[in-house]
Length: 296
Image (cartoon, rainbow, N blue to C red):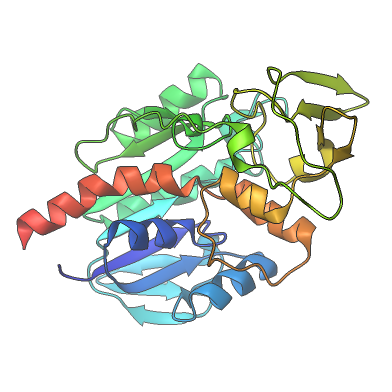
Protein backbone atom coordinates (compact mmCIF):
# COMPACT_ATOMS: atom_id res chain seq x y z
CA UNK A 1 0.00 0.00 0.00
CA UNK A 2 1.28 3.43 -0.93
CA UNK A 3 1.85 5.85 1.95
CA UNK A 4 -0.49 8.86 2.06
CA UNK A 5 -0.14 12.55 2.87
CA UNK A 6 -2.60 13.66 5.54
CA UNK A 7 -3.64 17.18 6.51
CA UNK A 8 -5.47 17.27 9.84
CA UNK A 9 -7.24 20.46 10.92
CA UNK A 10 -8.19 21.04 14.58
CA UNK A 11 -5.98 18.01 15.18
CA UNK A 12 -6.16 17.79 18.97
CA UNK A 13 -4.58 14.52 20.10
CA UNK A 14 -4.26 13.16 16.53
CA UNK A 15 -7.20 10.77 16.73
CA UNK A 16 -7.23 10.57 12.94
CA UNK A 17 -3.72 9.18 12.92
CA UNK A 18 -4.60 6.60 15.57
CA UNK A 19 -7.52 5.42 13.42
CA UNK A 20 -5.41 5.29 10.25
CA UNK A 21 -2.85 3.20 12.08
CA UNK A 22 -5.55 0.89 13.43
CA UNK A 23 -6.80 -0.05 9.96
CA UNK A 24 -3.30 -0.34 8.51
CA UNK A 25 -3.11 2.78 6.33
CA UNK A 26 0.49 3.98 6.14
CA UNK A 27 1.11 7.69 6.64
CA UNK A 28 3.89 9.36 4.67
CA UNK A 29 3.48 12.83 6.20
CA UNK A 30 0.98 13.97 8.82
CA UNK A 31 0.50 17.74 8.87
CA UNK A 32 -1.33 18.78 12.04
CA UNK A 33 -2.99 22.17 12.45
CA UNK A 34 -3.48 22.82 16.16
CA UNK A 35 -3.04 25.77 18.54
CA UNK A 36 -3.50 24.34 22.06
CA UNK A 37 -0.02 23.83 23.55
CA UNK A 38 -1.01 20.77 25.59
CA UNK A 39 -2.66 19.15 22.56
CA UNK A 40 0.45 19.70 20.45
CA UNK A 41 2.67 18.35 23.22
CA UNK A 42 0.59 15.20 23.88
CA UNK A 43 0.23 14.41 20.17
CA UNK A 44 3.96 14.93 19.64
CA UNK A 45 4.77 12.59 22.54
CA UNK A 46 2.80 9.85 20.83
CA UNK A 47 3.71 10.73 17.23
CA UNK A 48 7.13 12.44 17.20
CA UNK A 49 7.12 12.80 13.41
CA UNK A 50 3.89 14.84 13.34
CA UNK A 51 4.50 18.10 11.49
CA UNK A 52 2.74 20.87 13.39
CA UNK A 53 1.71 23.74 11.14
CA UNK A 54 -0.08 25.95 13.66
CA UNK A 55 -3.19 28.08 13.30
CA UNK A 56 -5.64 27.04 10.56
CA UNK A 57 -6.53 30.69 9.91
CA UNK A 58 -2.91 31.31 8.86
CA UNK A 59 -2.76 28.28 6.60
CA UNK A 60 -2.67 28.63 2.81
CA UNK A 61 -2.14 26.09 0.04
CA UNK A 62 -1.14 26.73 -3.56
CA UNK A 63 0.65 24.67 -6.22
CA UNK A 64 1.63 21.91 -3.83
CA UNK A 65 3.00 24.24 -1.15
CA UNK A 66 1.56 24.59 2.36
CA UNK A 67 2.20 28.10 3.66
CA UNK A 68 1.88 28.07 7.47
CA UNK A 69 2.88 30.10 10.50
CA UNK A 70 5.52 27.42 11.15
CA UNK A 71 7.07 27.57 7.70
CA UNK A 72 6.52 26.46 4.12
CA UNK A 73 6.18 22.79 3.19
CA UNK A 74 6.38 21.25 -0.27
CA UNK A 75 3.63 18.69 0.27
CA UNK A 76 2.54 18.02 -3.29
CA UNK A 77 -0.83 16.26 -3.34
CA UNK A 78 -2.81 15.90 -0.12
CA UNK A 79 -4.46 12.49 -0.13
CA UNK A 80 -6.67 12.97 2.92
CA UNK A 81 -8.03 16.07 4.66
CA UNK A 82 -9.64 15.45 8.06
CA UNK A 83 -11.02 17.55 10.88
CA UNK A 84 -13.77 18.18 13.37
CA UNK A 85 -14.39 21.92 13.49
CA UNK A 86 -15.37 23.34 16.92
CA UNK A 87 -18.90 22.43 17.96
CA UNK A 88 -19.54 24.83 20.85
CA UNK A 89 -21.85 27.23 19.01
CA UNK A 90 -23.57 24.45 17.06
CA UNK A 91 -24.48 22.28 20.04
CA UNK A 92 -27.99 22.87 21.34
CA UNK A 93 -27.37 20.69 24.38
CA UNK A 94 -24.70 22.67 26.18
CA UNK A 95 -24.13 26.05 24.64
CA UNK A 96 -27.43 27.39 23.32
CA UNK A 97 -26.74 27.01 19.62
CA UNK A 98 -25.42 30.27 18.12
CA UNK A 99 -24.77 28.26 14.98
CA UNK A 100 -22.21 28.61 12.23
CA UNK A 101 -21.85 32.32 12.87
CA UNK A 102 -20.64 31.81 16.44
CA UNK A 103 -17.05 32.71 17.28
CA UNK A 104 -15.87 29.10 17.56
CA UNK A 105 -18.09 27.15 15.17
CA UNK A 106 -17.52 29.66 12.38
CA UNK A 107 -14.12 27.96 12.05
CA UNK A 108 -16.00 25.48 9.86
CA UNK A 109 -15.52 28.03 7.09
CA UNK A 110 -11.76 27.63 7.51
CA UNK A 111 -12.14 23.90 6.95
CA UNK A 112 -14.22 24.61 3.85
CA UNK A 113 -11.68 27.13 2.57
CA UNK A 114 -8.79 24.69 3.00
CA UNK A 115 -10.84 21.92 1.38
CA UNK A 116 -11.38 24.06 -1.71
CA UNK A 117 -7.74 25.17 -1.85
CA UNK A 118 -6.20 21.74 -1.30
CA UNK A 119 -8.72 19.66 -3.30
CA UNK A 120 -7.68 16.44 -1.54
CA UNK A 121 -8.46 13.02 -2.92
CA UNK A 122 -10.53 12.22 0.17
CA UNK A 123 -11.95 14.28 3.02
CA UNK A 124 -13.73 13.75 6.32
CA UNK A 125 -15.52 16.39 8.43
CA UNK A 126 -17.10 15.61 11.81
CA UNK A 127 -19.45 17.59 14.04
CA UNK A 128 -22.20 17.18 16.61
CA UNK A 129 -25.62 15.79 15.73
CA UNK A 130 -27.27 18.14 18.25
CA UNK A 131 -27.19 21.08 15.85
CA UNK A 132 -30.11 22.88 14.25
CA UNK A 133 -31.31 21.53 10.92
CA UNK A 134 -30.59 24.89 9.32
CA UNK A 135 -26.90 24.57 10.25
CA UNK A 136 -26.72 20.92 9.19
CA UNK A 137 -28.29 21.80 5.84
CA UNK A 138 -25.87 24.70 5.32
CA UNK A 139 -22.87 22.46 5.97
CA UNK A 140 -24.28 19.75 3.70
CA UNK A 141 -24.87 22.23 0.89
CA UNK A 142 -21.33 23.60 1.12
CA UNK A 143 -19.68 20.20 1.54
CA UNK A 144 -21.73 18.80 -1.38
CA UNK A 145 -22.17 15.42 0.33
CA UNK A 146 -24.87 14.09 2.63
CA UNK A 147 -23.71 13.32 6.17
CA UNK A 148 -24.03 9.97 7.87
CA UNK A 149 -25.15 9.93 11.51
CA UNK A 150 -23.25 7.46 13.69
CA UNK A 151 -23.67 6.97 17.43
CA UNK A 152 -20.53 5.86 19.24
CA UNK A 153 -22.67 3.59 21.43
CA UNK A 154 -22.42 1.01 18.64
CA UNK A 155 -18.72 0.50 19.34
CA UNK A 156 -18.29 1.86 22.88
CA UNK A 157 -20.03 2.42 26.20
CA UNK A 158 -20.96 6.04 25.60
CA UNK A 159 -23.76 7.93 23.91
CA UNK A 160 -22.15 10.20 21.32
CA UNK A 161 -24.11 11.08 18.18
CA UNK A 162 -22.04 12.69 15.41
CA UNK A 163 -22.47 13.67 11.77
CA UNK A 164 -19.73 12.71 9.30
CA UNK A 165 -19.43 14.36 5.90
CA UNK A 166 -17.06 12.47 3.61
CA UNK A 167 -16.38 11.30 0.06
CA UNK A 168 -14.82 8.09 1.35
CA UNK A 169 -16.87 5.30 -0.28
CA UNK A 170 -19.02 2.65 1.35
CA UNK A 171 -19.50 4.24 4.78
CA UNK A 172 -22.03 2.17 6.69
CA UNK A 173 -23.27 1.89 10.25
CA UNK A 174 -20.86 -0.06 12.47
CA UNK A 175 -22.08 -3.34 13.90
CA UNK A 176 -23.47 -2.90 17.42
CA UNK A 177 -20.93 -4.57 19.69
CA UNK A 178 -23.21 -4.33 22.71
CA UNK A 179 -20.57 -2.71 24.94
CA UNK A 180 -22.08 -1.50 28.21
CA UNK A 181 -20.90 0.82 30.93
CA UNK A 182 -20.35 -2.08 33.29
CA UNK A 183 -17.91 -3.54 30.74
CA UNK A 184 -15.47 -0.62 30.96
CA UNK A 185 -15.43 0.33 34.63
CA UNK A 186 -12.30 -0.54 36.58
CA UNK A 187 -12.86 -2.93 39.41
CA UNK A 188 -10.78 -3.24 42.55
CA UNK A 189 -9.63 0.39 42.62
CA UNK A 190 -7.69 1.41 45.72
CA UNK A 191 -10.11 4.31 46.11
CA UNK A 192 -13.30 2.29 46.23
CA UNK A 193 -15.03 -0.97 46.76
CA UNK A 194 -15.93 -3.21 43.86
CA UNK A 195 -18.92 -2.14 41.77
CA UNK A 196 -22.01 -4.32 41.89
CA UNK A 197 -23.86 -4.98 38.66
CA UNK A 198 -27.52 -5.61 39.41
CA UNK A 199 -29.84 -2.80 38.42
CA UNK A 200 -30.49 -0.78 35.28
CA UNK A 201 -28.46 2.40 34.80
CA UNK A 202 -30.16 5.63 35.69
CA UNK A 203 -29.35 9.32 35.68
CA UNK A 204 -30.35 12.13 38.02
CA UNK A 205 -29.23 15.76 37.91
CA UNK A 206 -28.35 17.71 41.06
CA UNK A 207 -26.75 21.14 41.16
CA UNK A 208 -25.37 20.82 37.63
CA UNK A 209 -23.74 17.48 38.49
CA UNK A 210 -24.82 14.37 36.61
CA UNK A 211 -24.81 11.18 38.69
CA UNK A 212 -24.60 7.95 36.72
CA UNK A 213 -25.45 4.60 38.25
CA UNK A 214 -22.65 2.18 37.50
CA UNK A 215 -24.71 -0.96 37.31
CA UNK A 216 -26.97 -2.44 34.72
CA UNK A 217 -26.64 -3.11 31.04
CA UNK A 218 -27.21 0.29 29.41
CA UNK A 219 -24.73 2.48 27.59
CA UNK A 220 -23.36 5.45 29.48
CA UNK A 221 -25.80 8.35 29.01
CA UNK A 222 -23.09 11.00 28.84
CA UNK A 223 -20.39 11.90 26.35
CA UNK A 224 -16.65 11.84 26.95
CA UNK A 225 -16.41 15.62 26.65
CA UNK A 226 -13.70 17.11 28.82
CA UNK A 227 -16.10 19.16 30.96
CA UNK A 228 -17.93 15.97 31.94
CA UNK A 229 -14.85 14.77 33.80
CA UNK A 230 -15.64 17.16 36.65
CA UNK A 231 -19.44 17.34 36.34
CA UNK A 232 -20.12 13.61 36.12
CA UNK A 233 -19.78 11.11 38.91
CA UNK A 234 -20.38 7.40 39.32
CA UNK A 235 -22.62 6.15 42.11
CA UNK A 236 -22.15 2.55 43.18
CA UNK A 237 -24.73 0.43 44.93
CA UNK A 238 -23.29 1.22 48.35
CA UNK A 239 -23.28 4.96 47.70
CA UNK A 240 -19.63 5.48 46.74
CA UNK A 241 -19.26 8.47 44.42
CA UNK A 242 -16.24 9.04 42.21
CA UNK A 243 -15.06 10.51 38.95
CA UNK A 244 -14.12 8.42 35.93
CA UNK A 245 -10.49 7.39 35.68
CA UNK A 246 -8.32 8.31 32.70
CA UNK A 247 -8.35 4.68 31.58
CA UNK A 248 -12.16 4.62 31.69
CA UNK A 249 -12.34 7.78 29.63
CA UNK A 250 -9.92 6.21 27.15
CA UNK A 251 -12.16 3.15 26.93
CA UNK A 252 -15.21 5.36 26.27
CA UNK A 253 -13.41 6.84 23.26
CA UNK A 254 -11.82 3.47 22.33
CA UNK A 255 -8.36 5.04 22.63
CA UNK A 256 -5.67 2.31 22.65
CA UNK A 257 -3.87 1.45 25.87
CA UNK A 258 -0.48 2.54 24.52
CA UNK A 259 -1.58 6.16 24.01
CA UNK A 260 -0.08 8.27 26.79
CA UNK A 261 -1.10 11.56 28.38
CA UNK A 262 1.86 13.30 29.97
CA UNK A 263 -0.25 16.11 31.40
CA UNK A 264 -2.64 16.79 34.27
CA UNK A 265 -5.98 14.99 34.26
CA UNK A 266 -8.11 18.03 33.39
CA UNK A 267 -6.09 18.63 30.22
CA UNK A 268 -6.13 14.94 29.33
CA UNK A 269 -9.93 14.71 29.66
CA UNK A 270 -10.27 17.90 27.63
CA UNK A 271 -8.34 16.27 24.79
CA UNK A 272 -10.25 13.01 25.10
CA UNK A 273 -13.58 14.80 25.10
CA UNK A 274 -12.72 17.01 22.14
CA UNK A 275 -11.38 14.01 20.23
CA UNK A 276 -13.01 11.32 18.13
CA UNK A 277 -14.23 7.84 19.00
CA UNK A 278 -11.34 5.96 17.42
CA UNK A 279 -13.28 2.85 16.43
CA UNK A 280 -15.91 4.92 14.59
CA UNK A 281 -13.23 6.70 12.54
CA UNK A 282 -11.39 3.43 11.93
CA UNK A 283 -14.67 1.95 10.66
CA UNK A 284 -15.02 4.86 8.22
CA UNK A 285 -11.40 4.50 7.12
CA UNK A 286 -11.95 0.86 6.13
CA UNK A 287 -13.52 2.15 2.93
CA UNK A 288 -10.47 4.34 2.34
CA UNK A 289 -8.15 1.37 2.78
CA UNK A 290 -10.15 -0.63 0.23
CA UNK A 291 -9.92 2.27 -2.24
CA UNK A 292 -6.17 2.59 -1.78
CA UNK A 293 -5.66 -1.15 -2.19
CA UNK A 294 -7.77 -1.23 -5.35
CA UNK A 295 -5.73 1.57 -6.92
CA UNK A 296 -2.40 -0.07 -6.14
